[in-house]
Length: 260
Ligand code: GLP
Image 1 (cartoon, rainbow, N blue to C red):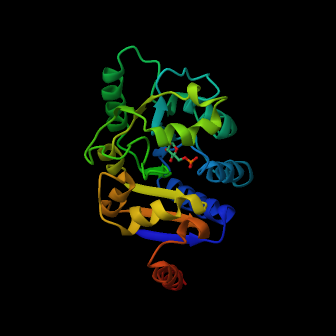
Image 2: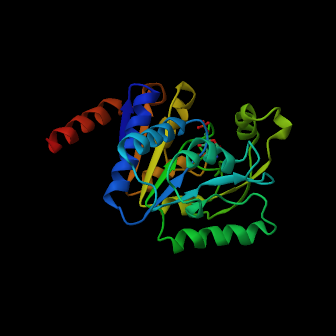
Image 3: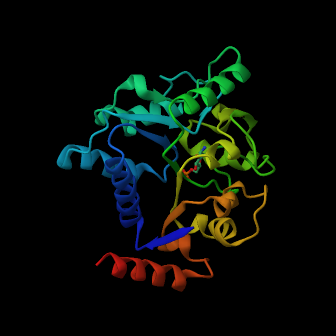
């Protein structure tokens, strides 16, 4: 696991974009990018849009899979994750919308849709890089505490904490959906690279548990410790409670020196 602690949200986002763009450029023919919603990756998406505009970062051969979607919200619902992705990324880059995948929260047969989603990921050759945030209760995607660490794409009942956290995006808390389709922890773990971002003091405690605490289904993000290529990029506030802060900074310097 590599941990990068950056000065602030802007630097965190720039570092994350450098990593994503670097991997995309390495694998020009066909890149499969896993995406996340929430406020954390917004700066990353802005930077990718800037790189597309100013540096010609090409998304024409990129296929995307989003982690999750609320049940009961159509893609054009302003609070749906599909709408969020259109507004904050897809509408501003040269991606072919045929290559964009977000779970369908309106699917008639949700279980069959979840299986189909897994198949689409497999058929695309698997996810090359998966962007992740971390929920206040340590979840990745919508894998709430207690989720099986081997879980696959399925419908999850959201915890009260998650519903409260996400109420800020809705007019009132009663409008927040109670269920979501989410890729499972096991599905996320199959991505070749996992890139987990966190910012702000609110995430400090849970991030330290995920990165340095025991691996547990209580904090599904702790599975990053089992991933062969997990990259954690945080701002100073979110990294404040990491015990090995100095070591992570030392490693970053040493790796930079190696490149010179
Ligand atoms: C939701 C999403 C997660 C996201 C989390 C954190 O629960 N399903 O993918 O990581 O929110 O959101 P934020 O980045 O706004 O803190």
